[in-house]
Image (cartoon, rainbow, N blue to C red; front, side, top):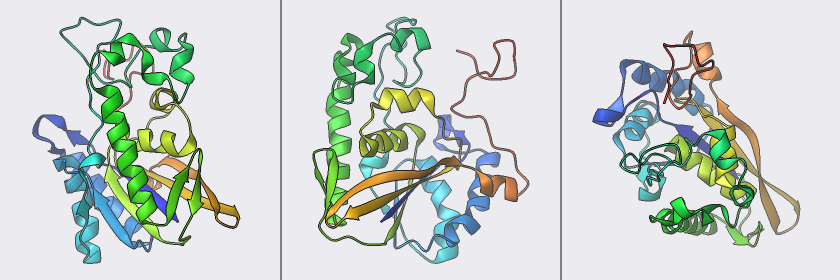
Length: 244
């Protein structure tokens, strides 16, 4: 089974939709999605993900099922370098604030940090991954510890239109890695495509393997440069790039 995770196009966060650039990115996705031969489509309830999915679904004459747990994983946490009145995303921490804490590298204990325990982050995380486990079990792959029992192995392709934080969290769960490592070490640019596939090397036992993360070849094929959303400044002196 192949799982295709597509991040929404360049976002207008204030209005929960796409910018003009994001709308073009969504259109450039269409030929890519057409070639996937997908059996099912699922989408976040948020407007920017819905708007990204719309052109592809229209072209294919398909409908997507909206799943609430595909929404952005936007539980706010207080960063050590920020005031408590200004909580932010868990994936925007400075290197020195998380890299020296061994718990953040542990898939089972990354939520043990006191600042994470002040809110519902662990409970929200458990809700997302348990929902994902139920979804996978319904599609023939039942989690058994760190791998999966292939109860109904298949070659289906399933597409999810979702968000950077959510898709990377789901990928970390499939790969048995702390989300903190992937959130801070990878960046899925707007409209990028991430592909994960099962491998069943012994009958009935499967695991998931990532074939590509954050691919934006459809943008280059359409003569467009990837947009910047989710990244921070490449150099501190780059005044036209995101600073915090």
